[in-house]
Image (cartoon, rainbow, N blue to C red):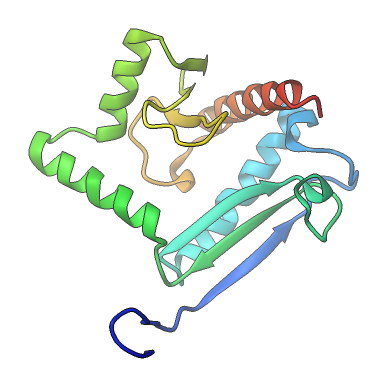
Amino acid sequence: KGVGSLFESQNVAGTCRVICFSPRHDLTVAQMELVDIEAVLSTWIQETKILSEKYVWVQIFENKGSVMGCSNPHPHGQIWASSFIPLEPAKEEREQKEYFQKTKQKLLLDYLAQELTSRERVVFENEDWAVVVPYWAVWPFETLLLPKFPVKRITELNDHKKKSLAIAMKALLQAYDVLFET
């Protein structure tokens, strides 16, 4: 702890893993075949299962390499796991729990139902997943990929849901590539 109440710290344990999506280092997820994206999802699921045994937070993301200023020049994925839930996800979890206590409904499923009814911010949709520009968007080009079914973790997806997620991811990521001419 530092001086006064403005400086507080705590120990946090964690790990970071890097996943190369393909032996082709120029290939992003958007350019991959669906079967290969499903293989990436399988890796994410396996790693999440393993890391969740030790850590309360597991975060998975794609890093586009040098395009993002990364020292690892080729597109790759990263998984960050820690014994600490970051501030924003912790706030989101708290709000979702409060909503459930009040309504006995899942906040994100109710939110998605309203978005799918209004159709104002729907970017993509298939039978299991939808991509929307969130009503509360802060960042330019911000989107939210949501399941249309109750699920807590990626580890709960069956093969069908994993395949439909791969389709949604590919569509979204290809749209971003077109938008940013990359």
